[in-house]
Amino acid sequence: MLNIKTSTLLASGFLLLVLFSGCSSSKSSKSSKTSDSSKSSDSIQVTKIWDQGAHHAFTDLIRFNGAFYCTFREGTAHVSGWDGKARVLRSTDGKAWNSIALLSMDNRDVRDPKISLSPDNRLMVLMDVEAHDKGQIISRKPYVSFSDKAGNNFSSPTESAVDPKMVSASDWIWRVTWNKGEGYGIDYQVNGLFLMKTKDGSSFEKVSKINLGGNPNESTIRFDKNNKMYVVIRREEADRMGILATSNPPYQDWKFDTIKQRLGGPNFLFLNDNTLVIGSRLYPSAEMAGQGNTQHKSGVIITDLNGNIKKVIKLPSGGDTSYPGMVIYDGKLWYSYYSSHEGKTAIYLATIPLSQLRS
Image 1: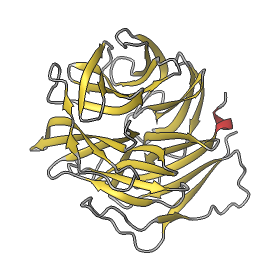
Image 2: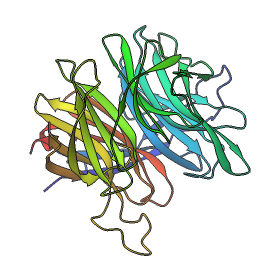
Image 3: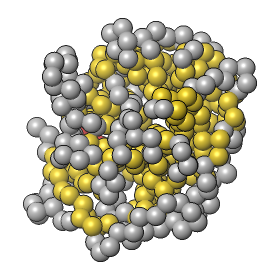
Image 4: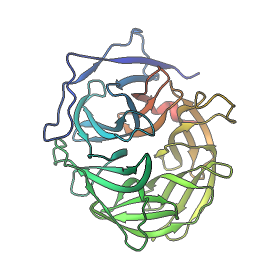
């Protein structure tokens, strides 16, 4: 039986929210103590860390210079809210969080901020920036913002160039993973799924096309110790099951394994040489008429290197939820996600002892 305890983050003092305009900090929020003082060291702890906006979604998480950084979108709605911004929070202990940036663009919707550490030791936030006309999306482009080397101040978002051989009106490079000085990401567009690479985040060039059916889209890349590339891919047509794609350098030929779970906002890490820890939205086995997304959960899927599921952990969540950030640190999986199970979408942080991830 999983032991899961929850607590709620309470604001301490007046919380100052500012658009990113050179001023980049706010007073911190501090978590309340869990009422149960007998927390065991092997229990899963879940804390709400932010709920100051109207709608929160699409998180990511990294640890840098002795602190956690959590990014997410803040806007008026999941979709049809054309005012999305990328917020960046920082915490040294995972309990008290400061807002240090709110990245925005006039008349644009900023979505899905993903944070990584660039080769020159700066935090890079990769964002999808959408333009709209009369409520319709007319373009999607990747933009980036960089911190200073202390991780304090973030630059205004700038557009990243996409390889002119395959650029389109809708290029969504969903997450960048760095390996040996180069960043790799998956660009999903109407014309298919493309593996891209960059040296500095300012431009991306095509590496290969990933020929996969089922309307593949959101994808996360990781590398093993031998530079073999693993990609977890969401699909929205055919059987909708997730896919684990693998390729060896130079990443032109692909092998596909089915993960027998529909995915949403997938992220993953290597737990060890033989095990993957996948964070995702968990869907019911069958959507029920009139239920909408009420049966959706956020959770962790433990698989082998071929995508065979060994274990699933469901976290306190529901409705509009998922899109996790993941960090393994201090014997725990630190797992950010958003959820609307308490009525309003908010950002949560789960700490999961690594012992809970063993099948």
